[in-house]
Amino acid sequence: MEIGLGLAIAGASFAAFLAACGSAWGIAVAAEAAGGVLTEDPDKFGRLLVMIALPGTQGFYGFLGAFYIMMKINLLGGGIPVSLNAGLQLFFAGLPVGVAGLVSGYYQGRASAAGIFLVAKRPEETGKAIILPAMVETYAVLGLLATILLVSGIKV
Figure 1 (cartoon, one colour):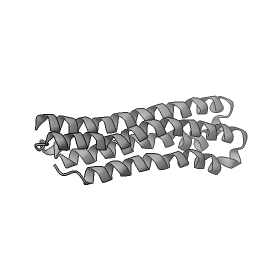
Figure 2 (tube, one colour; figure 1 turned 120 degrees about the horizontal axis):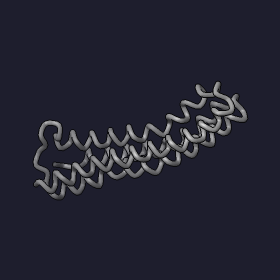
Figure 3 (cartoon, helix red, strand yellow; figure 1 turned 180 degrees about the vertical axis):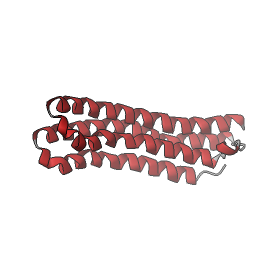
């Protein structure tokens, strides 16, 4: 029973950790691009802030996935006995949001950087520049949805 609980906690941890790493990586990519643009035109900060922050959502999705697993095993209330089978299921259920967050966070940062470079040359295209990285967001949301549906179907 302790191994099952440990695996479930590991699944929650991977969900949060991987997605947070993706967010940090994506924000860093976007911030590097914005830093270059802002050295030339500091007045564009407001236009660029949204695109810098967009990759940060993956970390929140990973946290939500982890929280959902923690609630399933009543971790905040001391935890409940979790079989090895259920622990493995919960471990793997945490991976969609974690891995999707890691990968999409990085690529959303790259898409944000492209949008930032667009705004540098054509500030009137800010709306279009935000849409580009927002398209990548879809797959982070799908990872979260997969984790929620998987966790919902697991009996502990």
